[in-house]
Image 1 (cartoon, rainbow, N blue to C red):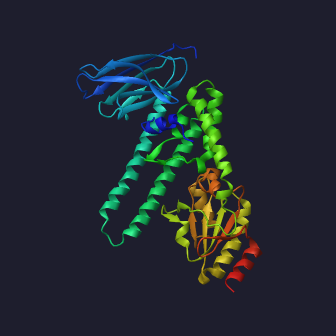
Image 2 (tube, helix red, strand yellow):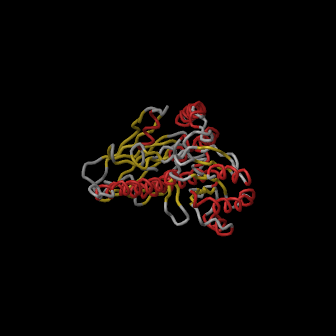
Image 3 (cartoon, rainbow, N blue to C red):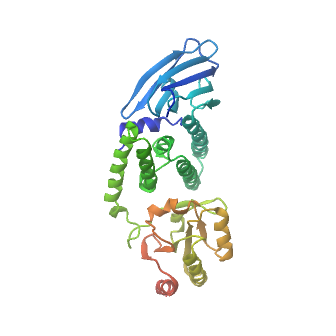
Length: 387
């Protein structure tokens, strides 16, 4: 399903009108290697095509001019492991400075809005990659620790937290740059080998959003056409497997959730195994949810000591509103988690949530035994369980 052009874009993790048809790139390398060259290659659907090259002067300077008719992706590279992905438009005059061995992260770059945006994204992605990579060092330090299983569980939670963090940033980045080709590149970034920031199963709406916008703005771009073909395949695949991943069916194991609490600690849904759990989806802005909360408080007070727990997931837009809702409704006795991403939360497609409040009652093994129990119905079910 993933075409070759996707692999090229994923590898380019360095992301990053009436004008002249020439784009000019002028740059200076700090600490250049004598006799070196810099190359420009165009990113095409199934290949990279070399366009031009230039010798780097002893002072580290180079200049390249490229003929182009429309905005497109190019790689400015010293070698296959040292390159910068660029979105170039006709008439742009780019000036840049970079260390010779670190072209992926230029010290300065001006003159190309698309390339500047990719460089900005790349800096944030780089920080996430560093945090993600540091987890391996912690693991190795604890390899002989008798508490290694607990350490691994903690590392898994941290990894999921880092992934959620860059996923949210990427979605905001796409929303802010939806008419730019940079949104296409953002879809295929990795925080680690084969660990993609955007997951088509959870984030298909963003893939479709980018496809729709770019098809309208760049109908003749080969990469955009290929993207459309791929998104069509993705949508068909997700639809065909929808029945296999139906979360609401009674008897199914509830899909894992791993999100941060208001204090910043990541708590997995699976950590509540051994108790009967009400997995509840709500938000402080949802009036029906707020009206239902007193029933949850009553149920928790009545059955918690008998083995009842609540794992409440918020679809709030801001942390402040979420925390205030918890305080105002006196909900602080049970588990609260959220990525504070409104309807873009990772849990929405995972549990196929179309409206809130919504809840799932789980048995001690994490299997769904009832859905959308409210008020008296929730109390009756719990009374039946704990009779």
